[in-house]
Length: 218
Image (cartoon, rainbow, N blue to C red):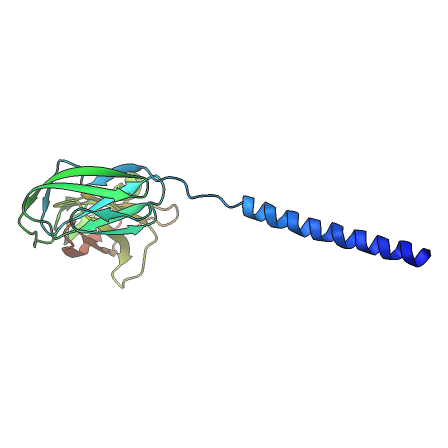
């Protein structure tokens, strides 16, 4: 009789284990979630703009879109952004973007291809400046340079030897900004270079190099 009870208890334990494993499997299956739908947020350049035939358009979504296609150009998705690259046909362009969750139509006026790289047009300092007051720049806590057109890329503040000074560089639209990090103030009688690389929407690039020299202590 004891042997019979022992066998029955083992059988119950085995059935319980199987039911637990089955329950875990169902929980894992139910835990699968579908990707959140993606909604169009913005386009750069915005709809209604004039663009070059060899330009690219960057679309931003609130979530990563799936199955993206474009009625013109080549669409490439990367996370929440989609780049639509030309060439586009000069004239009026109605660009329809389609993805798993919807469609969006943008309109542009397309001009001849842009082959001119951007240029530096101004800023806090100019290339070749001497006797720049470091105290004034440290007080403002930033250095800005402006470009002839909207660009993307990066800039950094370096010494003449090419060492990074440690300021925070960013590029937004037609402006490049270097922000002071506390403890990384620039000094007197030193040569500095704003260096980097930026590109316009057509892919024309500029190697940024703006050299300036700070003045001696008074």
